[in-house]
Length: 204
Figure 1 (cartoon, rainbow, N blue to C red):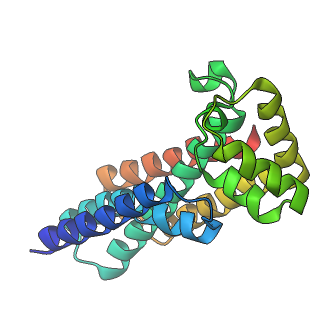
Figure 2: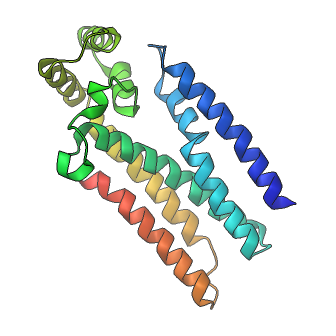
């Protein structure tokens, strides 16, 4: 009963998130807050549901279930921000994709939205022009965008935000009781390893 309710609720929330994601494609006035709300309804909602359903199968303790759901939400947001950062700053070896690929695709990920909110008027106009054009982005324009990211401290903001979500994920796991059960202990260790993997994007 509870498993079904959790899954039904998550399907609804993810549908809302997908609607917002599609709606954002044709808009230029997306705020950072709106973007974060959208990813909470997609990646974060999916991972929160997975963690909650696993908890429901293993315990009746409300606090443990809530903590693992909070873990899933935090790691889901962190994972998406990590992906956004790799889409801009990762090397081809690290990502297996084109360097600055998300800029080439004009993807409205967290870095560009943060830069738009914090750029000076001239830089904001440059970003808006580049992201509204229909022609392919040039290498010179890529450099212009990266320079604006540097001036708005966008990479540092993304690192700090990702680190805070990882901190929340670790805190959620720390609040889960450590029972003398090998499977439960291994599961928590595995989830901590997952956080550590995502956290590495903060250090690049």
